[in-house]
Every structure is written in structure tokens, then in C-alpha cells.
Image (tube, rainbow, N blue to C red):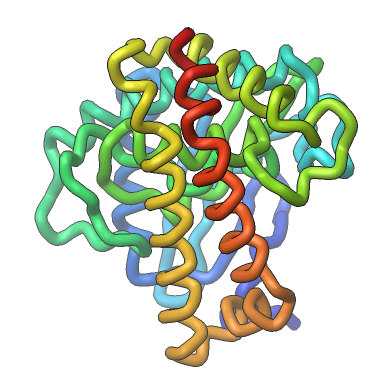
Length: 254
């Protein structure tokens, strides 16, 4: 029998059930506001209690680059960027009317233009016929700027990593080309693009700090991440993005 301490979400009919957390009320308020504002590409909240939260299941294909070839396609890349833009535009309406008592897993980072998804990576996007049509797992949602969320999304979708080993994603030129496609499809103004490499580095440094803090608090998920070397990968990617920063910035604007 599953208990809330198991920590992993599971499907129950047309619902996804996961342990309730202190930030669950804020996430559910966000999801409800998205649907009120016409954004139907996120789960609907279905309530929570002291132990569990429930949201609707979004049907479609999910996965990451290594196990879902459709996620690597340019169609998925462009549609994911467009989906993130629509999400940001709708979440901005919620961010402008935030209640002070909403808690978030990650700290707010002014300017709070939108509610960032916080982990807009391929594994948190749902595809239908190869097109990104849904976003799942809002556990790391938090108020911040568009570029704070966009920088991490580009890092994952480009992918700006020294450890990328899939053909078409493994060379800096390929990664920069994909990053340019993403920001173009998102519609980011040219003036805001040169700072993205630096913001990506700052975002990864914040992730490292958060991971280490949570591991020190005894949170098993993050202790396991450190044992598995996730911190080493992020440090290597920080060095990699820093090395190619000028080329990335030029590729996003030229």
C-alpha cells in the first residue's frame, strides 16, 4: 500500500495523485487560474487533503530525448516554445494578483513577471502527434521573470550540455541552432536575448544550491541526486555554457 512518504506520483483513473506539500495550495490556485484564463494545456486541480493532492491526467506522449525520439524533433522544439509563451502570458495574469500567503517550493525572484513553471524540460511536456500540447508537474512553480524560466527551458531543450550524446544535440553549433529556434518561436525580443547565457548559469547555480540545501536537510530525493552525481553534471554544464557564452549570445541575436 502506497503512503504519502513514498513521494512518487501515481495514476488513479483519470487523476494523478501525489503527496501534498506546503506549496500545494499555491500550485492548485495557479492551475485553477490558468483554466479560468483559457489555458487548457495544464492539469485541472481536483482537490487535496492533509496527505494527497489530485490533478487531472493529460493524455499523450511523454519522455525525454533519450527515450522519446519525437521530443528531439524541430516540431516539438517549436511547439514547446510556443506553449511556454502561452503559459507565461496566462500565468502573468495570476502573478499580478498574487496572494501574499501563497507558498512555493522555490523562492520568488523579482521581477515577478510570471509564475515560472520551474522545470520546463522535455520530460514535463506532453506531445500529441509530435506537437507539444500540455505541461505537467508544476511542483517547482514560483514567481520570477520570463527569462528566468526561459533560460532553463533553453538549457534543457537545446540542450546546452557538455554531456549531450545524441546525434544532432551533441555539438555546440547544433545546440545554439536549437536555442535560436526556441527563442524565435517563443517570440523573445532581440534586446533580451544576449543575457540568456548568464541567466542560465545563474539558474543552474541556484539549482545546485537548492539541491545541496535540501540534501543537507535530509531530503532523500536530493541526497540520491548528489550520490548519483547530478551536481557534477550541473557544474560541468555551468563551465560549458560559460565557455560558449559569447557564441550562444551571438547565435541568439545574429
